Amino acid sequence: MTRVLQIKKPDQVAAAKSETLTEQAYNRLEEMIVTLRLPPSAVLSEQALATELGIGRTPVREALQRLAHEGLVLVLPRKAIIVTDTDPRRQLLVLEVRRELERLLARTSAERATDAERERFLAIAEGMGAAARANDDITFMRLDREMNALLIQAAHNEYASRSMRFLNGHSRRFWYLHYKEAADLPKCARLHADEARAIAKGQTDRAMAASDKLLDYVESFTRATVGLRR
Image (cartoon, rainbow, N blue to C red; front, side, top):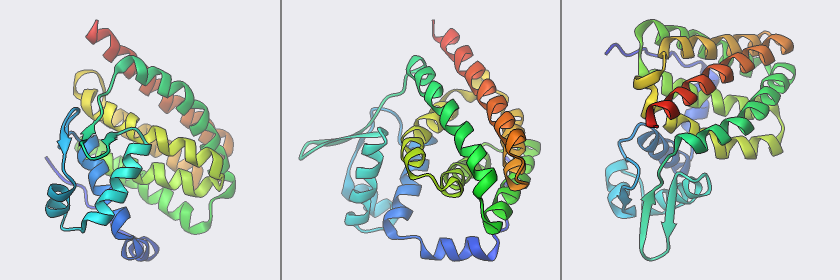
């Protein structure tokens, strides 16, 4: 599978350098869970994960606590750390909330994003277009995570941001688990690109419409997955 390389702008490189060890551990573990390298019901070990990541146990423990808060792992003190399961029917409930929050974040990001944030939205749109052409799932997943984080940052609304952080991992893992059965990855990547481009240009109405169109597609994919499970 072709890999699409994303060229980072200077502000993105600086951000990457300033990333804490806890953030590094979180990002890598979240990707491992979302892309099923750590599958549902897997039992995790802090020490084993710290060794695999080459990061100390304290940042790994803090990252796991964040993942537990988001519902991606279950921490049983002094017993076990378990990757949680996912359920198509519960995902429909997630989408009810995500639709309203993402529409709000799209609008406020289009209104409030800084020049640097708008440049990053444009870079994500270009990357999503390339991922669509290459049908590249890993690049798509990484850009999706970057776009989610940027929506949260650019909206400058801490209350909506807190809620959205809880939903993102669940949606990303569900997508990766089922997209080969019922989804069109290039189409979904193009829908993300449309939303990112509208936000970058400050087009609030278009950004909200693009968000609605993306969530319409994700909901239809989720309902198709539920149908496959009946």
